[in-house]
Each structure stands twice: as structure tokens, then as C-alpha cells.
Image 1 (cartoon, rainbow, N blue to C red):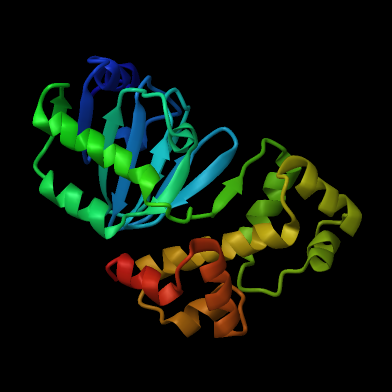
Image 2: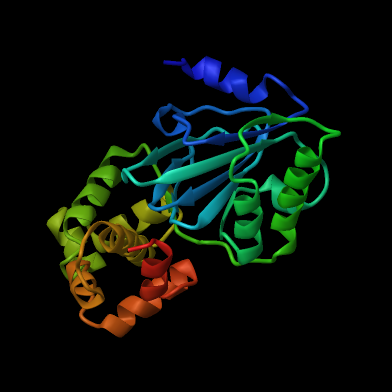
Length: 262
């Protein structure tokens, strides 16, 4: 089995090439980075990408663009998850490529990926495959797609991590700031300030994202219908669940279910 350094060296071994890697073992690696930018495409499940600041959730039929030299770690919890990684040499130009972002795989991008589905390994400038992959990269910034917006901020604060663990286990309950503060023996003001100081997000926003993330996992991993899932994560109204899901993901739960292939 290759070591972390060997895998990183493989990515950067040929600095000028575009490298295509399918079903690689990167998702089992600790935090690392490489000189090339990375296009990571997810199909069939949900991948979890961690950085020092946030946990990113990448649903099926979405991709994440990772700028060069950006520390990250990928994990997943679905056996049928299929991942494609394409590593690109750094190019100056559009600011799109300087920021990490998650976007849906468009019909055009899917067709381009299907055309190149047998490609694997390094492709060099001067070859038509290289020019095709470079065109694929350049398409990303031109599509003007909405970002997938679920990014959970992380912290090393032990008190707050204990609060988050409690919230995860109580998502089917009526979680309010007041009740949670009371259970923890804290004042509402102290808990509010803790979330704002350490996570730069409100309590309500954090709970909303936790619930939608859990909903995605239930849609992909269970046979529960949408009403059952809504109640399982603490919504008494299916419409409120659907509206919040759409607000954070730019799609309805039924659309997500269809994209996840459930």
C-alpha cells in the first residue's frame, strides 16, 4: 500500500501534466496538499471533505474544485461511492479557480466525462486529450452555477464540540437555543456568543445545516419516505423541510433523491 508521501508525489511527479485518477484511496488519507489543483467528482453517495476551517459535504452528481496547495482530507461512508479526480497544473486567470467550491455536475460536464470515461493517468501538453481536459476545466467557470452551500465550520473548542455532539443526537427533537442552553447549564447569551465566536454562525443556522445533512444521509441510506425523514430530523411540516433543503442545496429533496440514484 502506498504511503501518503508516495501518493502526493504521484500527483506532482509530472508538474506539467493533467492527471486523471479514478477510485483512488485518497479518501483514507490524513490532511495533505499538492501543487496541482484538483477537480473531485462524486457519484453514487456523499463524500465528506475536511479542511482546517470547514467540513464540506459533496452529494452525488456534484463536484468540488480544490485550489492548488490547499490542505484537505476526503472521507466517505457509502460502498457504492464512485470518485473521479482530475489534477491540473496551476494557471493564472479566472478567480473561480482560486476558491474552493461545490457545484452540480451539468449535462455538458457529464457528457464530457462520459466521453473520457476510459482515461486514466498523465496527459501532456501537445496531446488532444490534454487539450480536451483543459477545455473541461475551462468550462467550469463559464457555467455560472450556484454553489452548494452546506459547509459546517469546525472548532477545537471542547465545550462547543460537546454541544454539537449533543445536537447531533437530538435532531428529532424541538431544538431551541433556550432549551439547549438550559440543558447545558449555560445562559442563552453565553451559548450564543460561543457559536458566534468559535464558529461564526448562529445556533439556528448550525442546527438547520445539521438537519439537512442528516436528511441527505437518510435519503441515500434508508427506505424512509420524505415525510418520515422530515419527522426523523425534527420537522413537523414537510413543506418547511422541503423549503429549508432547497435553501441550502438549491434542489428539492425529491430532486436530490433522483440525483443520488435512490
